[in-house]
Length: 141
Image (tube, rainbow, N blue to C red; front, side, top):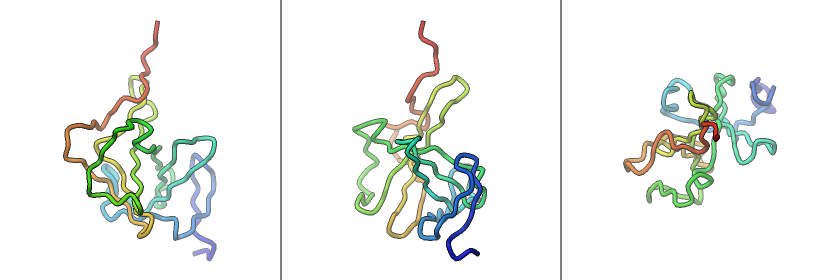
């Protein structure tokens, strides 16, 4: 292993060197990707406010992420989170079959910036959808 970090080659950002302290460990993986445990959160000015959660094991797999409060100012994931050390993000589908952009507000990603642990939780409330419409792909006439 290189002392400066681990190198990954990503589709979105080319070759990156990631320091261990920036890698989030997901003990349970992510829904549908339970075998992937290590991810890095990438921010790039050109794609703000989006961030990318990139797999360290399979860097070709990356998820566009947004703060849920960009989508719903009254988003309330409940009381069990410590906002002083945890960051909440949601996975965004940039374009589904209908050409729409959606966000999974039902199963946010929780990143603990102190322990570098991550997890995806499913909120018990029926208030949020896994396919919350952000932008409709339907053509206006």
